[in-house]
Length: 355
Ligand code: NAD
Image 1 (spheres, rainbow, N blue to C red):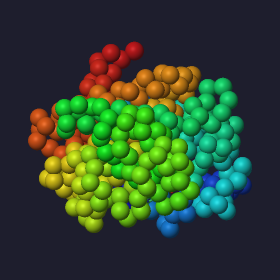
Image 2: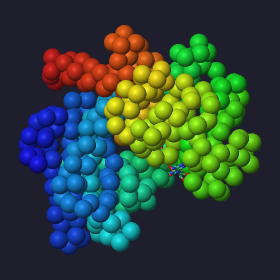
Image 3: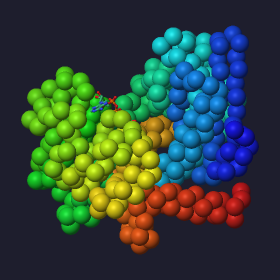
């Protein structure tokens, strides 16, 4: 792989490497685009098979964050960090603090947060070395668990979809199949039940299903059955890649709207949903509540403000659907246009009014 060719292809600004002998830290920070503001993106710790795999992952995820923050209306860019290592064996206080010092060297151009392999408690350790970290679980200025904000944003986006398909955004009497009832899925089921929807749920852990069935009286199904449920909305809240060649033709819903990241195994499955007449709420637009929540920490956290911003996901999903209809394109492509347009427009005024 030619790194400079790869960076030029998608307009990456910076790729930085850190090596710390004392702690064993091997980390990479990719900054994709800072037109709108500092690059926000979590830190992933993973035992990558090769350095190339780690670089590719950092680049890919950083670019995804540019689109997510731009489309969410945040004045933030996109970045990502990866630490090469096994979080169960290699994660130590010294390593996390060395990573924090690495983040600090970028003087705020990149703001880190938790991701796979890095939890909220690790964020607290990283915070001992740098202020450029968000996603703190507790204490002054901490955003706490983002799941309720993410779930609320998903419900707002789902209402926009229901309105477009059925002419009415109400949840009452609608049927929704929720895949995965963990942190976000649980809160979504709560909103749906309170709104009067008929809710089907599944999870790979029986105790998680039992909990929502007991709390909200919803209908449990087996993990494999969730794709075949005849319903208004399929709501993926578990893993990525669930809309794939095997599942897409099984769906009997009119809308796909859920919190999971990277729901489309490939872009062609976004085309397939479009061709089948299933409205897809692009994942990074509808699940932006998490990013909105952590971004609120930058200027002093306020949950009410975070919820207020998450409510705007309703309008952003509507804007995506409008672009898709006007241009005659699938919604996943419309989402990219929305993000790119915002970066271009704000970038232009920033070039004119240089302080
Ligand atoms: P979580 O781990 O708490 O919940 C995921 C649930 O899915 C778990 O209960 C798990 O058992 C279940 N699951 C896993 N594989 C499954 C399968 N094949 N079938 C059915 N259930 C399965 O995670 P979460 O924080 O609730 O996040 C859910 C999704 O939303 C993830 O994709 C995450 O990346 C995304 N997301 C979360 C947030 C947030 O604020 N937590 C923000 C943005 C995006």
